[in-house]
Length: 454
Image (tube, rainbow, N blue to C red; front, side):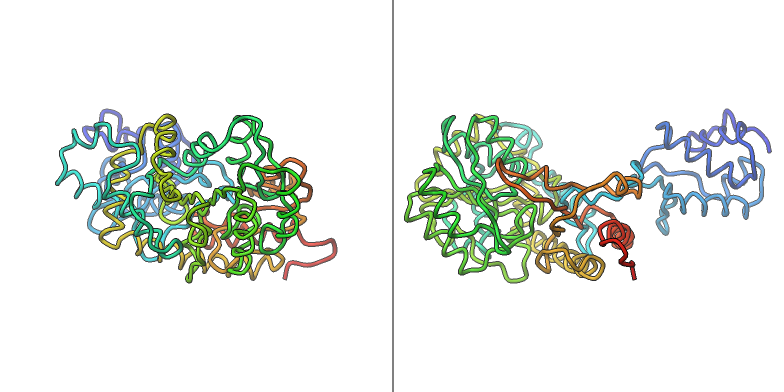
């Protein structure tokens, strides 16, 4: 095999690596490519030479190169596009770590849509009609009126009609929750939260010096009798909860439960922070708590679970007359959301792309939830939920040995809460087949002794 060092084609420079490798030619080519990717010589999106060009450069027959490229494709190194050529494939977390990620709660790729293509199209259109200097400048902290109006439109299925002036655009739900805790509490205040709650809320409350009291839960979330008792006992400043596909238990409050919870809080004068990350995912969204009590609920909704976490955009809907103060606190924490991302989401909402993406995410979420129902019948969660809850289960070293990344109840327990469980996220696996393999492995680990895995 002749040396390829000094080849005039920079895209073929990695082929020099085959000279130091042993074995059949086709395997050496695939291994040389794998080494080049691992060391950064070849990166995601790089185009590599056509098979006939490699055969000519290396001095071997075309069939051998075809076999080498097939092996590289099996290893997840390359992907081909008809009419464009062969490219180094983008590596996913599960490729790099060798794990199937059941711990990160991401929306799955939207069925029938190419999110990357939609993003390229959107950013191209924005840059074509907008002076880039404008996008790179500082913008109003609460978002422009157009962005706030788009947020109100987006949230209407669960929130109903809300004035744009009540909407604040934020750089993600975690930032929004942090700003609201800063705005609405002082150190030492008591807040009520679900017994198993969003870790970001618990961490922010701890940094703020707040005392978190855990409210017991049932299949619909907050237990009304316990909530009423704890409000009388602790006189909390806030109640923080997630009414739809609660994180981590996936519990969803019925309309009757929502009305009861709102009634208890309203009677006691306790403001609610509603973390409604998943509220738009159900095929028929239930009314948000803020729709039932606009004057007493700060509503937080993120695009991270319905469109894509990379957009880093969320909306706060404040009670009438209270948006300005909350916006000032948010501005002090995060200045403003990224203008380009806000422009992308606003454009998608206006032209209907956001709805198409949401429908695609929902379609894929339904399919994955059905797969989880078949393989993990003990898991709880609604038909469109991005995650399910395995009550009583725990993460063990054997799970990682089987290539599973999991998160257990310890990450979610509010102070004083007890109990075990596993949150199993269904969206992070890039392919449904990969998720099925992971859930099958998890089932074998969580079944009682003596039970098979039929």
